[in-house]
Image 1 (cartoon, rainbow, N blue to C red):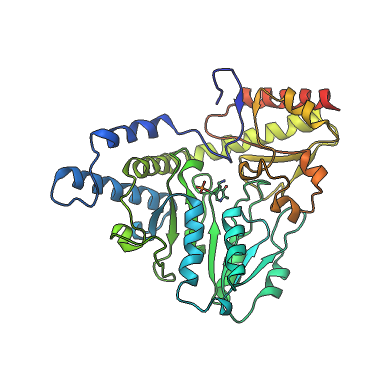
Image 2: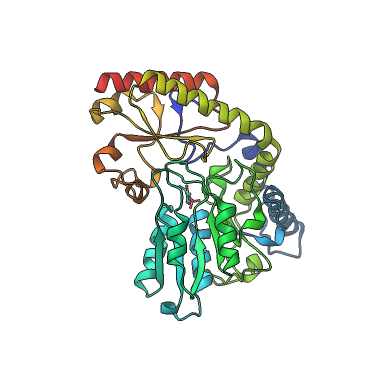
Length: 379
Ligand code: PMP
């Protein structure tokens, strides 16, 4: 993906371009099929309702779960909030203990810090230098009143993938609910949905529109409670007229991911290898962060040897990359890099490159060249 100035977009973990096939599918739901899905006396309403349910089925097909286990939300932030809200509603807050990893996205971390201030017992589990959860530390933090373990699946900054099946088994053996923020994984990798009680994800990370996401809630193990009250949408669990065009786009985006995932996966992993090799060849002492074995196929997080940051960034104008996660770009070192032991100075020299469906080999090689030249100019 390039813009009109020829700049190369390598910030897919922040957001992905909307696939033109998704845009085409959404088109008719703005001013032609504009009905309210709750209008049950005419075809405008029936068509809109059909479209919402059809999208739910497409999303469920990607996850290999039941359509009734998918609940629409405005994005992964809301889905994450929804899990904790459901768990804590009608409870004596000080009696509930929740455990999360120390590398959660802010939408989990800050939400839990909020609940902690309200009296909920919250613990964050250590990770090792690669960002992998320390199972011994997890074990030591379990209490008799631990109700939920929440662990991010694919870390949005450093790209580390957690050993989800092992953590899920650990939680299940102790009768503890297991939630994962899988925003960076859904649509990009195969996984086993039976590992989860709750799973949050978002349309704009998988080539769909922004402003829509979903929460998977396992029908047998979870009881979801409403965070937004009002009408009967989403079985009375999330009121408000459904954003039909976004839902249709999200459904189409999931359908495309399901179709293309097997062939795309190996292509994207190859691009990653190419980028890694090109950068390591060009930049001596380059440090790659996160686990090299267990990682998202579309993310590289690196720390450059000493640079003059302002010079480097000026020379980098041909590339769209991230200095951390998009959510942190103005507020200094992120909690994830802190958890990995980064100093503020090392964090300043650290960058995330992430690629996807519209990235090709030529863009990857050119990006490596631009980055290496910018580094040379800035030392
Ligand atoms: N979790 C992760 C891991 C993310 O990368 C993001 C997006 N930066 C979110 C949650 C928030 O998603 P949304 O923008 O859909 O609220």
